[in-house]
Image (cartoon, rainbow, N blue to C red; front, side, top):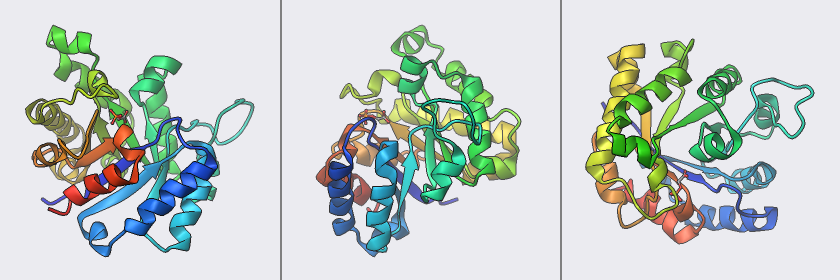
Length: 257
Ligand code: PGA
């Protein structure tokens, strides 16, 4: 089974509109058709940058997708400060990161909320990128696989195989995010394989084989080759290295090899 790779840049809370347009245009200028054969490319900027980035890609007719970094599960209403699926949909946003460890850690996002967000996104035909991953304490305890498996099961509660296949799971060990300390390819593969095995238990092997599982956490041009060579790693969710055209393009080009 060959799954198309996916390279998604998580810009986090970086880039004003002006800066976002510059970076989107720089990535666009490097675009080559062979990218599209090898991988899906997505950038996930802050909400205010989504439409400007989308406009750059549309204007240049390049198939680079845009994704949000969060969403609320209700369609509208008194939820000050929140953004809904229909709002994302209208600006052409095709993807949405949910359950990122920074949202879980700093903003108290729970597994139950991740599940509600996943369902709302699927209903609105936006593809969720569901983040899971353990802390250093959990890894040191030796319970990483149980912890991550439980996050996956909770995220997909009440979701069927036809819906699940639209989702991407990103394994991001918290201790590797923004720290420069990457999981070894073996560590990343072990957890990504366990995630796929869990998806197979939930939805059947054929669906699990179709779904993409990403690695995220200090992925960079120096370590990408060995990570994406792993059988259960289908691409990356990239933070720091997605903020510069050079490194992001190098990561995309690693998928062409
Ligand atoms: P990093 O971030 O690549 O800077 O470690 C990845 C992420 O948090 O998605």
